Image 1: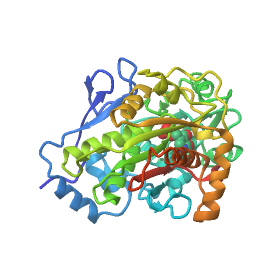
Image 2: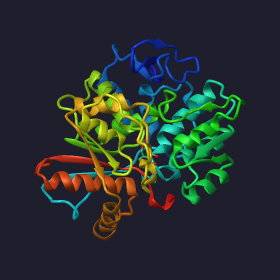
Image 3: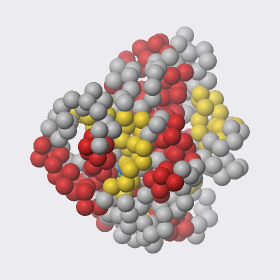
Image 4: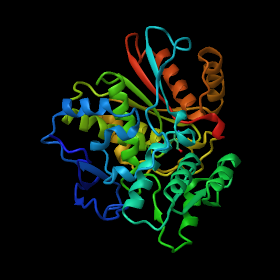
Length: 382
Ligand SMILES: Cc1ncc(COP(=O)(O)O)c(C=O)c1O
């Protein structure tokens, strides 16, 4: 009988494959690349595991064996994960099945809750005195909430013009908030002023946020009866979701729960900040920093992704695409979704729907295709 605990076995460097222990705090690997978590699934019967998951509450924590935390009994569950897949009925042609993975019902109103729930749990498990990160907005809010719930002090660095509501809510959760410059790169520099040993859990700078985000891929496959869609549209900033979902699909395939062709990933960015799109179009393996990011779709104002090489290879390996969207295309589609589907969506999810319409119009997405679009945050956060 398989024990009811994590099957995580080691950290592995995403660039070189060298390994490190899960029991020590780790941030970036010696080559400056993100660490990923490896699992020992060699002796595991996938159908036994899936049957066990079915018995547990519909929450991201049901996948305990494929998550890295050690002490499940200490976890803080604010209701993260277990989000619905909602079919769009009127905005898209009926012959194309478009499902919105509606993430705005997560605690703090965005999918950032998944990664931060896991990363803060691991930080506490491994003895962090406090936690900090630089964020475009939603990640800071999720950090503030989970740190509060774990009783850990938190510091959040945000761009100066981050939505006032997010700044106020981070403070409301008791986090200390610093603001600087126009993007999270400048904000991040403010964190260097402190030497109190807080752990920096910015995107992909530690191994566990991606593990929380991985649960989006696990859930999706389970919701589709251990199947996968033809396409996944993902609003891409740091790209943790793409990295995490690829890991999820690799692990489910190793367990024999899924097989066949992988979904084609479509990374969606804004024309005013599209480093991944530019690198994809040029055929580059890494993405240069975007010099003057200019978008009010806050979650996508990320000029540099530390996991750029992983994202770009996931796009190419799945025959995927990278698409940029203009600022004035986002509002009208969000309004149409409100009027035609009865849903309030955030600008990042709306950007994905603009990209989807473009691929439908150009017949790249065809009748019979099944598409999943990540609707990652609630517009009320802004
Ligand atoms: C609502 C929303 N969508 C998408 C993103 C981009 O996510 P990722 O950094 O995982 O690519 C963010 C990041 O801040 C966000 O807040």
